[in-house]
Image (cartoon, rainbow, N blue to C red; front, top):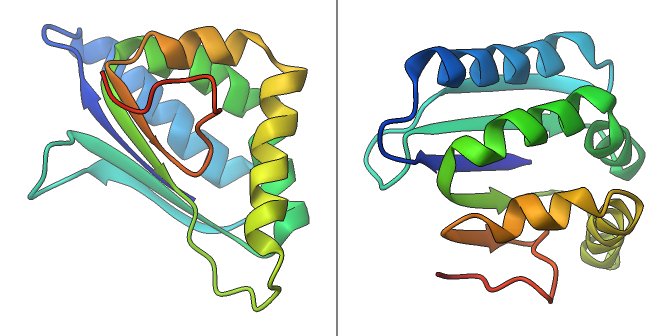
Length: 137
């Protein structure tokens, strides 16, 4: 799982650092995470990114449903102007894409407040984008 975010203009630095600290805490504290990195993104339109390596689809679901992940969404998404979320895998299961999509779908169903947070972004791209959300502003 990789996410990249471009910040809204004039986003307070302390709020950015708090969100980044929470992203790091998620990687440090969640047993489902094999390894991770959180930091600045260079060479593109985004300011920051995070990448989490997860062992399998069960670990992915655990990561997506962790309460700290929901807290990060509530704090971090309002700071973002644009975002992309990438799901990369070397899992040979031919149905892994459908399984990943199901995790996203279930999460939006179980936590409808996420939809409002995503809809407030200028653009949001990635495999987890609900069909009801415009991918570009």
